[in-house]
Image (cartoon, rainbow, N blue to C red; front, side, top):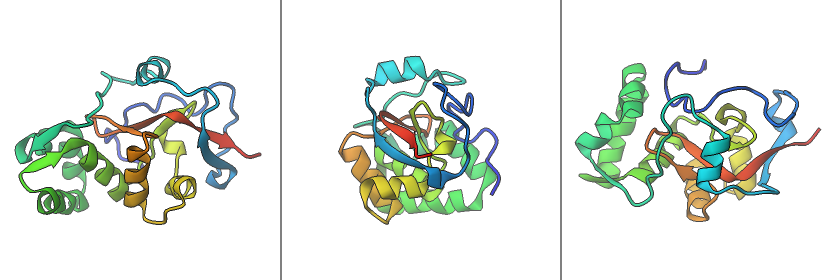
Amino acid sequence: MPPKVGYRSFRCVSSTRNGVPDVGDPARYRLVVAASPLSLQEFIATHPPDGPPGRPVRGKLWSRVEFLDQQWVAEWVAESEDAECFCLGVFERYGAVIPADLVVLDALAEDFQGFETIGREASWVQAAHVRAFTGIRDLREALHLMYRDDWITPLDDGTVIAPRISLEFLG
């Protein structure tokens, strides 16, 4: 499936950073604990977004209207019938008060677009990398575990970043 223009394209600045070669085979990479983890502020400073930076949504609650008013949700719904079904499932799962952090993770599990790690943009991270890192087959469950263990941070722009993880090239 081709990438969605404008949808959760938070960072995608270049395909190489820090002199790491561009080799597109996902099997040649794995997620690892970063040798030099970054704070959230350091990560955002060294991985500047294309637009205004997203803000962490830990502990934030959205009403149904606030959820649907999120730009990333509106763009996704406009482009995909599956997104409409996802939204109905969110309302069924969470009711009238939606935990923003969990719904961003749920959306990522539903339509995996990757997440940015130290040195690599989101598109380089594949669902198989997440499953291998956590040892959990279910992607939603794996993402929620990574979040609980503070490996990833969901943002209000619908993206997820990983200031403590690198995507290691295996050769």
